[in-house]
Length: 125
Image (cartoon, rainbow, N blue to C red; front, side, top):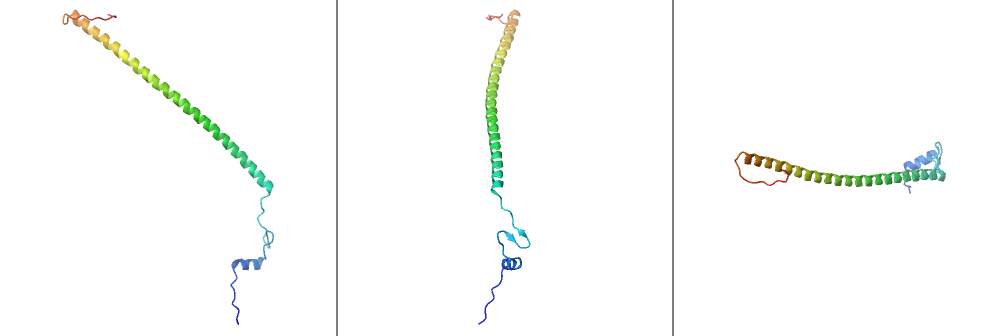
């Protein structure tokens, strides 16, 4: 009876040429990648924690500044609305005074010229 040949995989050929990997060592290539030591991991973790803390501080500073700007914006909006309202009232008052003065002058002129015979009562006339 003939035995069937099992094909050899590429990995098996590689191991046959260079030898089996033992403890991360590959014949002809030397040691494999060096694992990160716990000291390196602690140093990296400390650096990341420091950066995270700084970013949180910056975030809090930015949040507080944003809230301050929102309050300032609200105050300025209220002040602007108040000024606009006051200006509207002032303009209405001035228009009323000008119209009253012009009407008084017009009717006085009409009365003096004899074109109108009505009596106007005005405290400022």
